[in-house]
Image 1 (tube, rainbow, N blue to C red):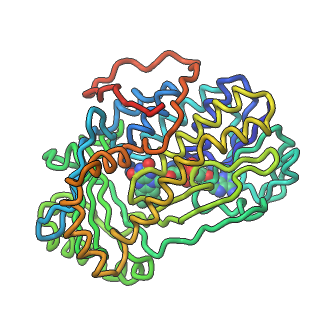
Image 2 (image 1 turned 30 degrees about the horizontal axis):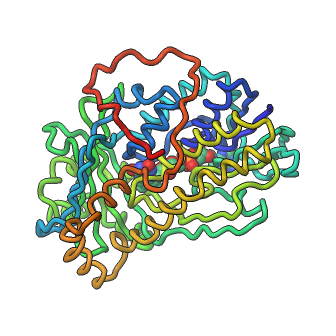
Image 3 (image 1 turned 135 degrees about the vertical axis):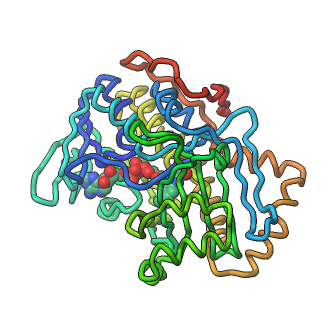
Length: 414
Ligand SMILES: Cc1cc2nc3c(=O)[nH]c(=O)nc-3n(C[C@H](O)[C@H](O)[C@H](O)COP(=O)(O)OP(=O)(O)OC[C@H]3O[C@@H](n4cnc5c(N)ncnc54)[C@H](O)[C@@H]3O)c2cc1C
């Protein structure tokens, strides 16, 4: 089959790798002149790692990432809000560039045709879809088009169906720093004051060009306050952070200027249906969420692996897409709803919600079943009714990691 994929991000690349290895003629279209990762750090959950395993890429990512054993969230006066431990499995903090690089090398090896500088402006005729670029170029028709254009995708509006994709009024400033003392290893640490202030530090491992272990630092803020914050400058932000979380001083003091921080914005996306003729939408373009639960990239990887499996299993595209939609429905719906409910608990101006969170969240863990529910939710495996399918790889697995291995004992509910 001729397959066209829009977007050279996490979902697009993972889908291209699986489908090209299955023998399809795959082209991937990226709007930027160079394919590149955006943003700083990611927490890959056991579910996403299992999906990478299906693509034969897990050990490549683990070699550079940093194991994350727990999530530790406290108020500025030290009260525990979250103290969640993975059990028998771990998360992996990675620099976005690491995940991007591993996927991109596999994409190139898979013989996928990479078309850069092609901003898809329209998808023509979903029954025999062709792509039209913003500067009038035409590609196709394809047997299947996969829209993986990310959270801010505009194409989903032109496909018909119901779309809701409001921008969250809150975003996050990110930077990558060195963790020279190792004080921030092995946990995602967050500090909260009410619901309107959240500071986080996530270990993200190394990059080939970086000096030692890195962490992603993030600071949450209402988007309406970004300009004012920027005008105050980096010193003011550093002072605020150190006043609320003195231990973060060695990290935040490394950020030389405001321009070294990137602003991440996100949308709460729902799209019904996700398939139109021979066009299917996957990843954030179909179900973007706020990053409170750290699931977006994981969902994208599982989408890609599931779609590859469905296309491999049926020569009839309509049936394959129907099967894909059915297999992904419950898992995606659970995480979209959970993210939607959780977001105001960490990013809002509500004092009442902050009070309830600080009083109830940590003790609530001891209610029967609550710890299991929270851990499996964090791991990304709730409502994942199907196993992830091992795909044949076209390359020898990477050499054993020089870094500590994470046990390969992820369990996905069958
Ligand atoms: C602050 C923040 C923190 C996050 N933390 C986590 C985390 O800890 N764990 C986690 O799992 N997820 C996290 N996420 C979510 C994760 O980044 C996304 O879910 C994931 O990147 C989605 O992958 P995607 O392939 O759908 O989209 P993207 O990775 O955004 O890729 C979309 C691609 O499409 C291209 N494109 C867009 N429009 C067009 C067009 N018209 N034509 C051609 N190309 C186009 C873009 O340039 C881009 O390359 C976080 C997100 C944010 C913002």
